[in-house]
Image (cartoon, rainbow, N blue to C red; front, side):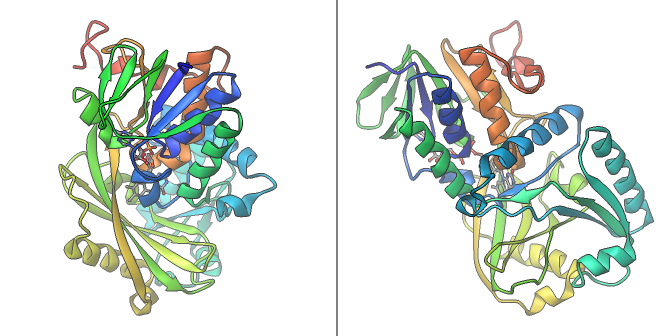
Length: 373
Ligand SMILES: Cc1cc2nc3c(=O)[nH]c(=O)nc-3n(C[C@H](O)[C@H](O)[C@H](O)COP(=O)(O)OP(=O)(O)OC[C@H]3O[C@@H](n4cnc5c(N)ncnc54)[C@H](O)[C@@H]3O)c2cc1C
């Protein structure tokens, strides 16, 4: 039977959309060329974080954090969830002022957060180097193991009758997709949730790959307790061009430490680069000097799908009939996956989502309602 919706890609976004669409009674098929939860989802740090660069980002991330807390409720260990909170570390008084401004925005949005001085910072995180000014503690942030969550979400959809097909979609056709083996799968509507690989099927989409490296250490339980991110991250992470690194450490429930983060444009080469790793480690050791003595086990890379305004594309693709988009989540797609799925499902199946869908509609990038500018 022809499905109502065919989703290309079973990363965290495709899996969350399959879950939300099947929950609304639609017949769903998901096509995945590799393993469920591979792609950027397997590379991501899994930090569930409220981000407030603009009102639309804050609305999407904070709504999604609520959905994550509902999803993991009662079974946090299945997702390897930890509500570790985030400390945005302020190196000096200027950054502490930025922390105060961030706290005002977040508190006004109902998020639990506190500006902390140096004394509290060192009490909470004694490994941080001396001389820092303080920080912003955001209590509701947390972390998951993203590939596991993707598998759980897809399994929920399959339990409602959704189908997972192993296949590489090589072309979009009218009301169908063509696979690499020459077969064709028809569907009422098609959702592109293939991350940066959406560009292979729809090259005009306003997406750009942004490469990132992540490293993981051996087990050092209690080395840090919160996700630690430099406040300067906001500047470097959203630089639209050039390579950047930022201090970003995560305490895995296993006792391991995840070390991020780097951003590079205009490469799709997934090779881990020793030069970039060295820059990341130097930056991390500037904030936590004892990190230099830890054993790093492994490094990997992934590609974030970045849009010109750093907001995702969620909604109908006006350039292609019956095609919908759920991509462009850049470095926040684990966090925003569940809200994305609710927004898409409300548009496709009717009903309400928790927030206004308009800031994320792909039509913001189209001219005269058709071609992408
Ligand atoms: C280094 C790094 C760190 C990150 N850290 C975080 C973080 O801490 N917190 C956060 O919220 N976000 C983070 N992100 C961002 C997050 O990982 C992504 O936004 C998110 O995983 C995107 O999910 P996706 O499902 O859209 O894409 P992907 O995970 O890339 O999934 C796409 C899927 O589609 C499949 N596919 C592709 N093409 C085809 C095709 N033609 N046919 C069939 N299947 C296809 C792929 O195999 C893949 O499984 C990070 C990203 C990176 C790279």
